[in-house]
Image 1 (tube, rainbow, N blue to C red):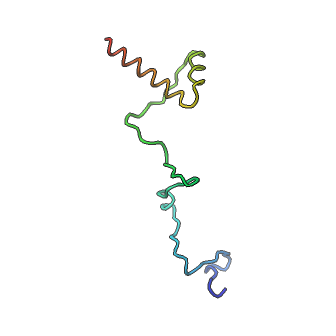
Image 2: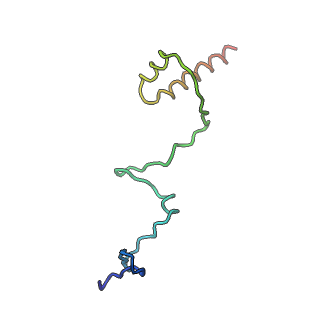
Image 3: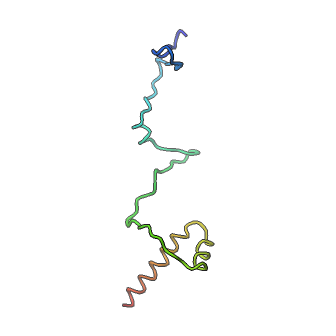
Length: 94
């Protein structure tokens, strides 16, 4: 143990390296750190949209629900897009 020292606390088993230049990993550091998985940068949270959507509870016919769910992931977004097109047509015709 000539190059390394034990931590100052006698009950601690942490070995400190005086030549270590790694930054202290604080909670603040973790909150702002970039996250990489398999070399790919992962964004934190959902991207901010221009118009925030509002959560609602809606009752749909089983055949409508089966159709949209059958189209795979993103089925709720496709329902939203279909309703938006309907609203645009209704506004255009009024």
